[in-house]
Image 1 (cartoon, rainbow, N blue to C red):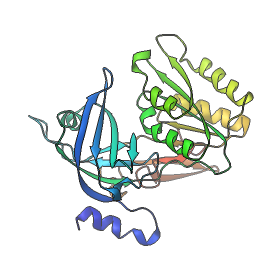
Image 2: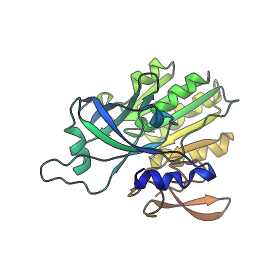
Image 3: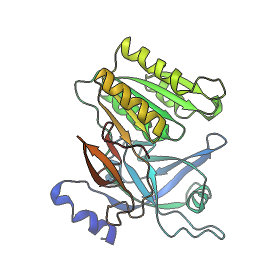
Image 4: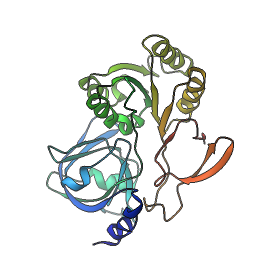
Length: 281
């Protein structure tokens, strides 16, 4: 048993989560557009007991002058227990992701997870909406599969700088979702138009819950609409993480619990939180 496994094992008694350090084998690692790459690995069954919104800590390889010291947290883009696959969508921005980009089919990648608390869909919800921009759509992608498995209709509002930078659109459509795309290039992604799009869905067929990730602009808008229409919601927050277990305390953020401000760790108590409790940075 590794040190990481032991740390997680010690917490199983309170039923928080079960995570493992495991070696996976790269199946593919290809560009999906000018910014992002999709990494697919073959993974053992025990680490595929995932929930949408959870993440893994990846041991990124060293390459050239880059020597990543810490693991890199990466949200789950997809997981398939039947095929034994785990997927990550990432953008090459630093030493860790530059190392990931060098991985070729057959290479080994050590991962630690699944970690954190993910999204949940209430059993009585029949129509939900996710709203996200850019890479935030990667974190929300597995939610489409869960919605389909629960016979819950999904509306996916996807925003990006331009049509070629939209992520997960085909995946959402393949899962039976109604997809609405908004882009800067087309002049449709502004806050006012986004609000009109959401209001039209709420006032039309109705929405039982909102789901989002990352963006402060979208967070504030959804909080306003959530209060106005009395619709619950969840958000996955992005934060720098060192350990992924909550020990280092570097991912602490403030939350509003009924007027009382509390500090919680994004990696441990999250990364998914109640929409109304999250405070924009």
